[in-house]
Length: 246
Image (tube, rainbow, N blue to C red):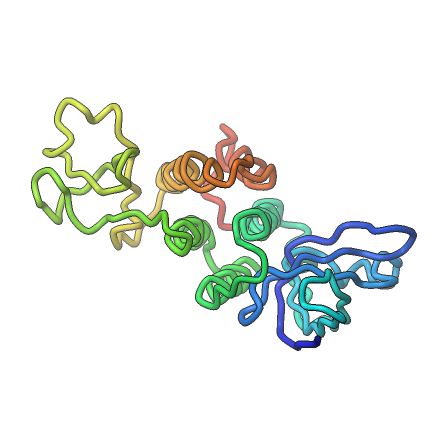
């Protein structure tokens, strides 16, 4: 058995004396594991960092085996954000979410492209926080837990949408919320096309996505939300933080 694909590295864990077990995300073979012999050497350490883009070849005698990877570095994305804590934590969080949420070897090409676009934004001068929240919501949608922000189910209104129901995942207008407003989740305006973004909007976006990630996706998988995401949330919610554009 053999295949070749490009991949975004999600995680690399030591195995034995000098090997690594990689978890990668590929457009055509999904989230996939494999062993790299000698991968833990000092020479290879910069290659096998989460977020890096690789060209990989996977080989195994049988399809159900772990198999072996050979890999070549295409883009050293992790090195580009090492001195930018918020961007680095966002990259680690996105990779960890994919590793822990996606079923093994199940292709998700659209989600792969979104992750690659997010990493491209993180490694350039682009403002990334909105795209990060959209990525988390896209992950939910791809796995069947998407939100419906098109119209208020109470009033039918497509305007003045300011909340999301934690029960249904549908947008709710200010009028439709009524006395239940304090039980609903704030809806960030940038998810409705507003171009100006405040730090409060990013925090609301992380709260919104985090609620559904924890209560719907990871609860269904019977596992916690990855610690890497909490590290990003802690950074963004720090009292002295500004809008995380660097």
